[in-house]
Figure (tube, helix red, strand yellow):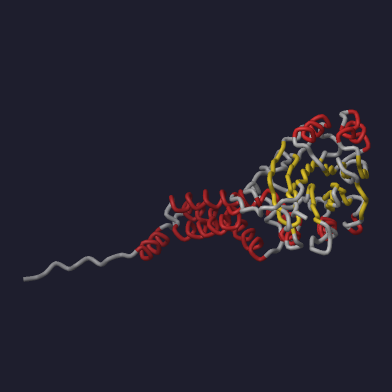
Length: 337
């Protein structure tokens, strides 16, 4: 009596190979080529992010969009798997998972130290060549009881507007370097200021001062604004490297302003290794975009970096009419004496 032969089992890998072989139509090749071509730039971007290489002007701009790249690779994975292009889909999923592991921790708060020192409330605003609404800035200063205000892209006309809006009645101490369009900046404070030179050759553009909070407590603050990499990549690097380290040999230091960089830039991550924490990241708010030019989605390039000896009690991104940047606010808690 003859026994019927058992049909051979075909594993998933065999299916993938068979399907790859039978998909030989010109239309199928075109779809596969488009999917693979779309994945290549995301693979390059992910590799650059992993090795810590910012690259050219264009890759610096692309790296700022890394969180959105994770969404794009997930969409490509769904398209590839839905059309049974298994290997392409698998690569897209690996890229999605890798980007997610880099990005998602920024959405979760870190436990803060219980400190008993003074609270310093810092507000930073890029005024877009003096176009930001001065009344809004003054309103935020009042509402949040701001101690130190960092202003970038501050023009002489902007200073006049802020004066008319009553800023200098609330914050009577100031160190101002107004200039046409994007090079002006300054610090305005509720407490006495002593000018410092903490930012090297870019000191006029990135002014710094010691803030006397009373009771023998002082902090050192820098208004940060390195050049935009789209206009001058080398100046972006040089001016960011001008920014000071925070360490036990000095008073508590705070860097506040438009960094033209975020967590997906190696340059910004290097700044954090100098003894700082990012206020937004500490409270799980570091994915909230602060800048857009209307053609790209918002990206977080405005920051308050605080000495790692401090704790962060609050952080907010505040809408700023007239500017292409939102303002950023942080409440920094100092160590007790």
